[in-house]
Length: 244
Image (cartoon, rainbow, N blue to C red; front, side, top):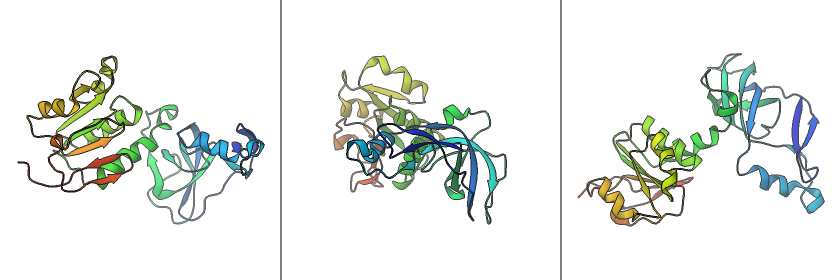
């Protein structure tokens, strides 16, 4: 199979490599599309032997989308032909082998070229909200809501039953992006005070969870549940304390 390999020079090298075989608990995926994320280029540079890198070659990439073509022993819940996506090392290749536990189902109508860019963002935002105990009916503030990760976070929060999603963007020209993603109130931080605007949007109640995807400053007054701070990936929250 063909794959993009790091550790040879300053660029990925397209090479023929052996097609992997699924071990017990793994599935083999025919990769239809792969996406870059923020780890790929630093890893490419660190491996470049022409500029002091370690020179150990490896198949690059993390995010993929395709279909299941083979199952290892003891695989349950997956079938050949299932549409899938996920994040796993060595994804810049025509075939990807992955632990069955870390594969995500892909809706059949979701194009692989779109789906491959979603797994890291989906896992980050869903994992962060789960880790801090986010529950249906809570209010969420997303800073940097017009960014890729912010837009995904807004939609994940809505799917989990958020009562209200507030999002920030630096400029008014970006207001439409988070609005279309389901954000109820968009705060333009170049024009509005973040803390006051958050309190205004929540009738002075504040929010339950803050997902921090930018460096926007927020007073604790906008987060009345502040006995402790829990962090996971890019998110933070102030868990249960009765509202005043």
